[in-house]
Image (tube, rainbow, N blue to C red; front, side):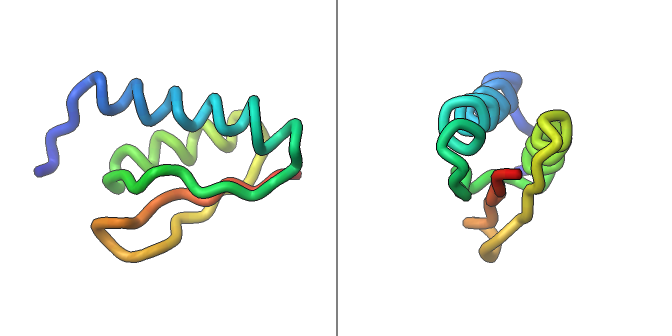
Length: 71
């Protein structure tokens, strides 16, 4: 299913923001996000780049997810 709801997108980006601001940056730890579709991961990658952090897609579909690395 290629269609994503607005709530799915908002939820995924909110998850990404909270993980970055509350865990990755202050605690300097690497963390995996929940598995998401490639289109949502693309948006998450853009958000991670906004924070000047590195992200990498890991795992195999349908459990492919983003791993965020601290600076």
